[in-house]
Image (cartoon, rainbow, N blue to C red):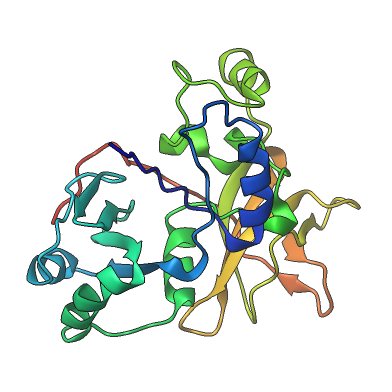
Amino acid sequence: LATHTLLRLHSSLAEAMLTRLQRFVLRADVRIDAPGDALAAIGVWGPGAVQLLQQARLPAPDAAEACAAQGSVQVTRQPSAVPRFELRGPRTALTVPWNLIAEHATRVGSNAWRLLDILEGVPDISAPTSGHFLAQSLNLDLSGAIHFDKGCYSGQEIIARLHYRGRAARRMYLLRAKGPPPAPGDPVHHLREAAAIGEVVDAAEAEDGSCAIAAVLRIPHADDGLYLPAAPRRALTPPTPFTYARSAALSS
């Protein structure tokens, strides 16, 4: 009986990740592939998201990060105060659910989903920021995305030592700025410092023309006086800490 595990990551990292994971394949019956365009994804968000999934004859998991499947379509509930789901599967299998959901929903582009991820404190690492952050810098210990009592992975010793014996010097915060979003990897500066004190993880345009930014900052400088140095210089709002409650059941 074949068992499949789906790894969700930024497309700019797919080839490098595939090459790296291949090094750990020790059994002949394990295969790692990059599906390319064979798989597709649909995001469903809003107060009526559960009802939309039910109309499409799909499950709607109750807890954040819980998964359920209907045939070859996988449904994952994303962390959000308002119900939010990701549907993934073969393009052909998603055609019928897409048509049923689209009849009663407003279609938006991928930027809207990116914005929701940023507002919820879900980091999306891409090629420009790959390898730049520790797990704690991305709040993965606060969100429950990393487990300290089980598992084995590259860099585990450093991350575990920081958890048990140290204190994170950097954390990810939500900031806002006027104008278009900065690029992942762009520096964040402080008026009292000559060198950069942080780095943009991801950013997306908001409906009012401003942008929402997830950035990792040195904690002593997580206050006002922050700006993006690229001309023209743009001031940033004081950073807002992310709050997480992924383990709690979400209301429908």
